[in-house]
Length: 322
Image 1 (spheres, helix red, strand yellow):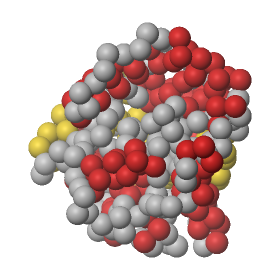
Image 2 (cartoon, rainbow, N blue to C red):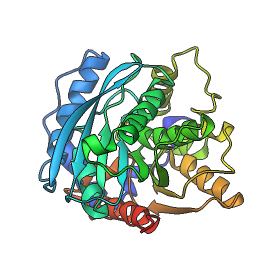
Image 3 (cartoon, rainbow, N blue to C red):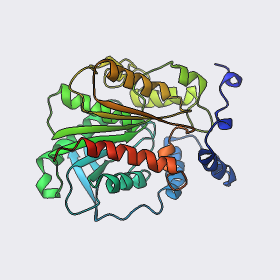
């Protein structure tokens, strides 16, 4: 679609989303990047520092390196209270190529606070250095490790969940399917929390109408993220990438599916919830009006972002058995 035919979303976003965009417009332009993944990651890390300030205090924060077949993976245990009814594994977004535990720490801490559960962030390996399905394998092995060593790390693995934003939402659902299909048990998966994920659509209406320089999700950006994760020879039809090519009709835990109104990935969430609806998979779908992709980061400025985290937390709590 020609750029001029796209919907002018910046004229339609909510006032608080507009405040975030105005904040970015007021910043001194960054030095030109050489376009390398190293430079892109450095810029992303710097950008997220402001948004992660003033996160709530935790009872315990501990970084632990976990052995996997792909090497050691850093995890961060965030425990809001001494006793926890469950453990929620958080998988950060960033198009598979950027992001880490620091860039998403405020989200994780708020999620821990609002659920009163332990949150464990997993710093899975980024692409293109670690192409599909390495991240899924790493996450699965980290979960197995904590299930087998729960007492050593003082975590409750009887009930678990997966949560993530954007690429992390896809990895949350993909890992759940991977565990199911390979008959790997890591504790009862009580629920999944999926904020504005991509689940494998390639040419949806929302991808045509939305996305641009303002959110880093132009059509070319999305292709580049795919190529980095899958490698250019990888299949976009692979069942743990295009999750609609997997079995979404049975043995899937309850899912909270959240979307942003002006997100090119909007239709991925709609297709997912309608699939679950058709096959009686327990779910809740909520679209947050006037928002752009990645709005969950901006809880310092946006009440809607805080509400979206609370909504997911409340959903997870609802499915915990006493």
